[in-house]
Image 1 (cartoon, helix red, strand yellow):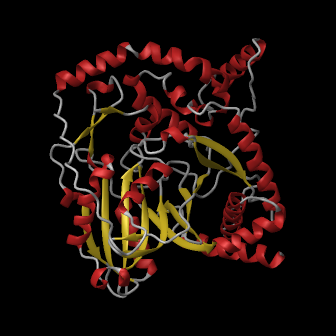
Image 2: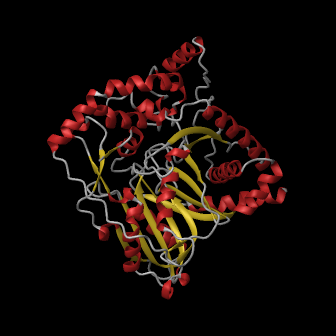
Image 3: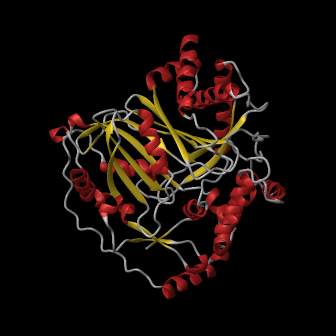
Length: 483
């Protein structure tokens, strides 16, 4: 049994009948490279069955501690059923992109069954006629962006030839502990709570002011400033910046979300983005974030809903060390940057975005990598779920101003072709999480010369989410013409 970290547990605590904690990937496939030009469900299931030994989390099931006295545990499921997790369905003809996006949105809007390992994979037939796609869906409590890419990598090959994996006996399923045993574990964990807090205080207290999600909690900023001054008084290094003066305005996607989703997807040429990067001396990520700002500006202007101040984007940053490569769970930090929707000129917007992201990186370097985990340790496990939901609600605009407007995430991927069950992967569109106050998520993954965007929005707040993809292309064309 493996215990969840506090950050892993936070992704479980955030869930409600309207909010889900799972993420995914829509992979477009060319089946002509597969054996016989087809990929059947049987062949797909057989491939995954042989690779399960390479990805242990796919067998992990959640075991919760009674009364929530401690974080839950992962155990190897003694009743693991591959047929439940690997499914297929077909789009009705002609299988257009709009029909595919609608099917993805419906699948994503269904919660995962917590009595089983928290993942599903769908083999989708009839995409764009005779095409094929695969939609994966896995809980964020198991993975972050980089560890999720590692899991997909274990299922993929470098050529159409399906590599043979050495036969490995599946791990012996864990004995399912009884309530008495889990209660004992909870009591032991409860006794260790003061030690967790003591270990977390030195690194976390001086940086409390930087944890944006705690901003609405009375006294947090003052306590953080006091601890930072004390640390400087003893010769410690500290970078008190608060939230950099960022205040998120209200937008059409700042309301509580419904239980239903919209999905939009599309790709941009990585070479064209690199041309813009080279011309202005910025980074690819700078260009991506600036394109997102320009796209959202166009969408907001068309609805007469453009705020007078920049939007605030939450940007997850991986803090996974080289030693942690190959591990699972979450090693992330949540940073905040202005999304400069107030700037009409694309070039000035790009340069200002570069400066804002450079400041964010400088700020990140002055913060402990485990800050999010350490801050969570201040909350007794028995109160964690309720406290996390309350803090999350306060930070996403319950009756007040949202702390963030949306998520923008850029996940690096391989620049060479990959194959699944012999079929060539032609695109990789991420599918991520939205929450109350942040009814929009823009995640991009680079793959094989393309930047593949997956955009998730609340179904009511942004019914025309695909227009954002069109605006991204328009914004890139403007920057290319300026060169």
